Image (cartoon, rainbow, N blue to C red; front, side, top):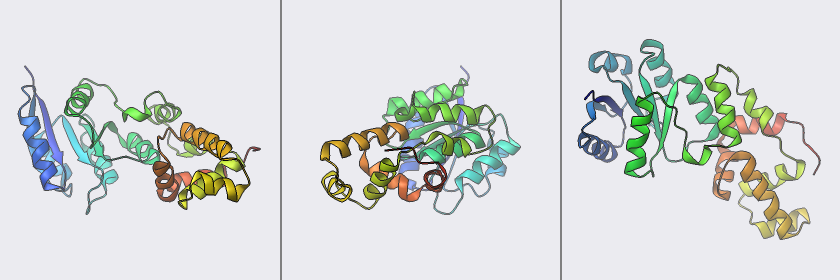
Length: 231
């Protein structure tokens, strides 16, 4: 049986050791090396010749996106799986464009973790479960097919004027009741707007909306550049 050769880059030592121990128990997988950063990624891959690189998106001292680009530039056949808690949609778009084949959320079950590695090894592309079948997954498909611009995101996120106001207030920490008072709406109407926003952004919670609105440059640009539809 041909084993999947894996190189792991994770700067959290406890997590790195735990992942390594888990993968060593799999008969069809082999850890070729583990590292706390990706500073010499090209050299590492040349020496250890993995078929898959497991890469932490939150490396403290390294730019994970640049690591992906360098890896694919020098070793196009190597498949990369990114690991993160809750990757932003704009980040997913950029990483897929750069060559990432799969994503593993750090709260994934062991079975999902292993299934993702095996699926990517066999040539599949694996997105975070909450994005599967969403509008955003279709946008990512465009990235895979060669689109070079995050303009797709800007064109696809079409917010009404009211939805934009609700997003801004959520980002400020306002509750539905407070939003209703400020915008002179009923709580039910605010709840409906929040639901629509979650649907459009393929998110699940208000916290994710707030985090996304405050940290995603692509999203800020989208809200600023897209023409506002009526309420």
